[in-house]
Length: 126
Image (tube, rainbow, N blue to C red):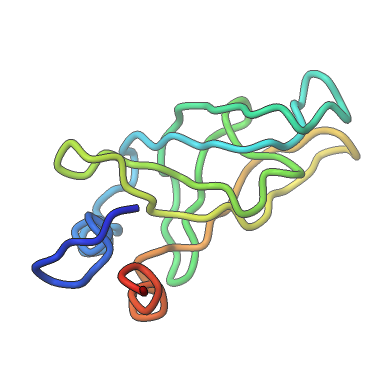
């Protein structure tokens, strides 16, 4: 991630954070190395899926639907959204629900906009 020399803020994140509540229904791309629901236990392969923001809470983003979401092993991976034409990390995969031991049903990401002060310490660090 590149820094914005003018503000010292992580490029694009501030803009994404300012409008997060207005982004329900907007497209988001999820990337991870976790399980594939259709092939239980197969992980370690980079996968990605396009889906939408379906819920915004004070701490989390609910992303995806029953067929398009993160799964076990994807934790820590990014949720990317285009902000002014720039792919921007708006969430970090945290957890999800399960219907059975190998069937993930949804995904929840920690909102990046809430931690900008912490992130900014490292973006332009020497």
